Length: 109
Image (cartoon, one colour):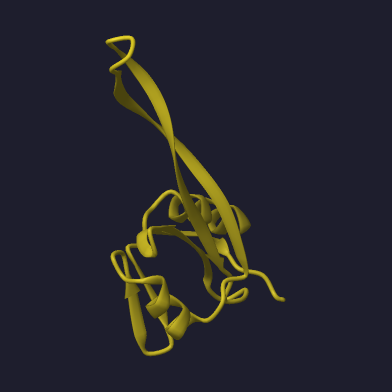
């Protein structure tokens, strides 16, 4: 039985949830962080991340193209609703929910 629970936790960890229920409200990808905080409260943890994206630029003095790298910061908010519900990892970009994924069962605080 324990192996079955572990296996199901691993399967859910790789599966995007696309929606999160907080009380009577449903939070979905595309919603704002204001809505998320209003209905789900503060996250248990906030992780700061950064993607570096290559951008083609032109140097008019040297008259040549070059590749520059631009940082695109984002956050991952982690919600732990206790041992009877799954942990939710919510990727936030520009104040909007981009992705909601579930992990294993939460833990008691």
